[in-house]
Length: 118
Image 1: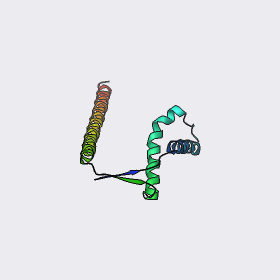
Image 2: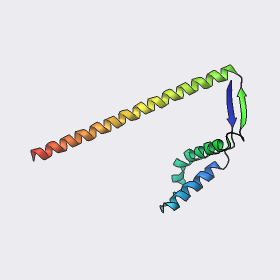
Image 3: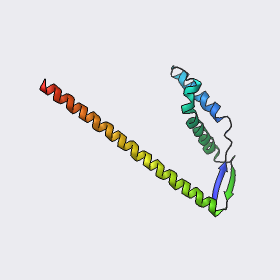
Image 4: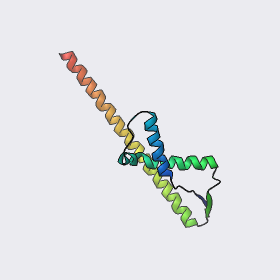
């Protein structure tokens, strides 16, 4: 059995945009343009949805229970695939960081060698 809670997410993007703009004003920095907001908007809206859900402890949510084993199995498979992809991305990012760190160390060593030979 899979429990799903439906939550009303209307206006969260507008609230997220408003928060981002208010934060820019408070920091006395430039207010982001609409195209710049796109990158942050979805993540901030998702946070607002979670904040609202936790604030209300899910009381305004509509609980749906799926009793279809095929759907439950498919959801579990999708979850496992997503976790594997996430782990793969994490490993890839760590490898990229390591490459960058090694490149910086090589540049420092070369610079040091040049200084010593000069």
